[in-house]
Image 1 (cartoon, rainbow, N blue to C red):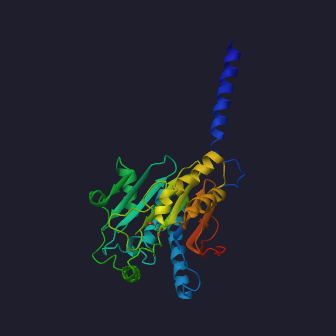
Image 2 (cartoon, protein in one colour):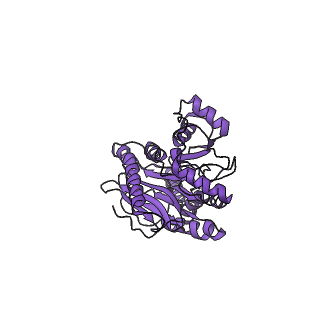
Image 3 (cartoon, rainbow, N blue to C red):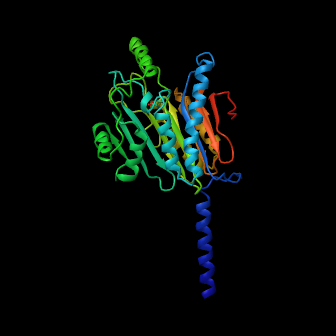
Length: 338
Ligand code: ASP
């Protein structure tokens, strides 16, 4: 009798393990690197004709510097969330990108910033939308995740929360950059939101095997007051789950929300056993792209493999894995050499 009970318990345990295993993508995977980090700095319709040699090298330098900031944290055993925040803060301070300082203008000539972050260990997350006057929206999103019982704050409530948390404010004029203002004037002339790219995002795997993802943006040039894109929407612009992947998206936000891009990729891996690359390509091309949207994602699987997928001619991007060197790319055809 005792033996029968023991056998039954062992069988129950095995079936439990099997049903767990069903949720894990089955491809043979390489040994994980100790840490890995990857970024995007926006996707769009740019090519060698639009981007001068000088501009290309400025973007390459900026992307490599951001990767170095995150890598330094991961190398010292820092966690994936800290690496994502540090990396995005560098990009938020660089007016080349549509996030933080370089945020684009709304139709009213103001700035409404969005950011979100998610950690893969427990799927906790934080997001802010329509934030004005703060230097690093990504760190406010982190505070929402870690120091509040909520996950999403908007407008005046987001600003009040940021103030109460002692978040760093931005000096008057901080967001008045030449590049974003030029875009605004062009949009004003045509009364259109067409120029809409340049968001930043980061995904990372730390030495403890935890994933995190974050995204920060000014949104779309000439967006209407109160418009919210995909970047602060968990499941659309950002997702992280240690069982599958971390994702940060960039592109035409309305389409990314309509197809829940970041979560769709995760779902294909979790329930369908797809690889990250196959899942991302299917979501970007067959779902989001098929509706008429454009843009791309940076993703990282739980083995530290960085993946990019886009349906635009360009996406500023980079990846850096322990023991390697930062690799950056600008055009869809770039092979991401160091
Ligand atoms: N996805 C962002 C938005 O729609 C824009 C971008 O990625 O450039 O707000």
